Amino acid sequence: ERRALLTQRFDFRTDEPLTDGAIVKDDGKKYFERGRACLKRLEFLKLDWCTGKREGENLIIASKVLGLWTTLTNKVMTEKYENNRHFARASITIAMTTNHVLAGEEMLAVHWDKETDA
Image (tube, rainbow, N blue to C red; front, side, top):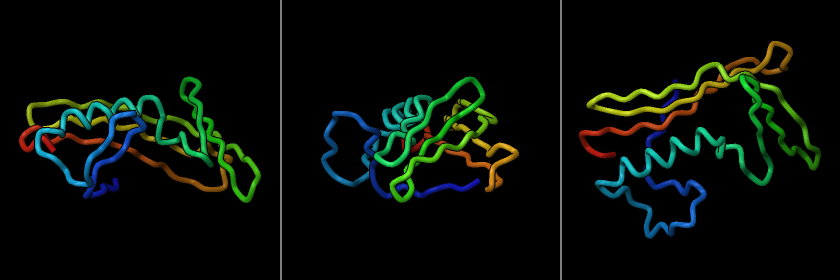
């Protein structure tokens, strides 16, 4: 599992203006819920060069490489939401299908530390 250290806020495609690049105390729950909704709606795939659609356990990803659109079929392995008194975590794990050139899994997750609200 890979974890990224966040040093600035993410714009999760909302109309709300972000005033600076600092993590502001007491914003953790708000941005966790925003990130959780983005995972559920697959907003991480809504880019100029990439898009995706989910059909049940299958996730079809289309990406533009050198001016040509290619498609990949992936499988959603797990979709989890964990919540206890210390933290909350939402994650989605995606695996390549058996006939895919690249083998492996990717997990995207958002975390909220309730004790520090980060």
